[in-house]
Image (cartoon, helix red, strand yellow):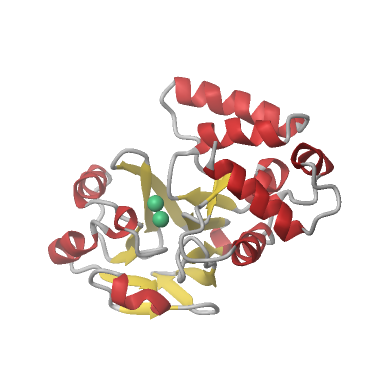
Length: 254
Ligand code: ZN
Ligand code: FE
């Protein structure tokens, strides 16, 4: 029912055009800027009806006002940050359902990168838009939340069905993978994934989407229980949250 197009924006952002094939409703998730989104809409002969924001940062909302002005699209974003989302029409929170024609997304509250950050989970279409909370082999910085909050947010995403495709806000995958190898050097799935990511990036290809199953196997920020990771951090008996916090601290300094 849902067709998804990647739209590279700014330096390393992705916006995503989501097209409900049944009704021709068309959304864009996290439009950093209007021009590349407008070009992609034109290339696919689509008319924008909806704008979805995961969080307030400019590189996820910068195109809101211009796109709304040109298309009349309605803007849906985190209710708990409505005052920081340019042009917002509809605020949503945990448990709300967002409709795009016949397609439906469930809203998940996943704070910590920002105090109100949401994901849009299109369950029937096996797709989740994770903004700057979960990246491929990475997670967002803790600007407005604690390690415990981020750990809870990431685990909420990790609990989605394994086949769920993960569409995140940035192409950070290669540097995330290089960091992941420093804390989990013996993870075979991680090593083969990094090799594949190096090949894709050498060809100028995106590494998105990944899947929840692949993230569970290779994303060090979901893997606080890993013995390999705990050995690398010299934290054999620490709590999962403390292991996560130390992993995040090391990534900040990587
Ligand atoms: Zn952000
Ligand atoms: Fe961002």
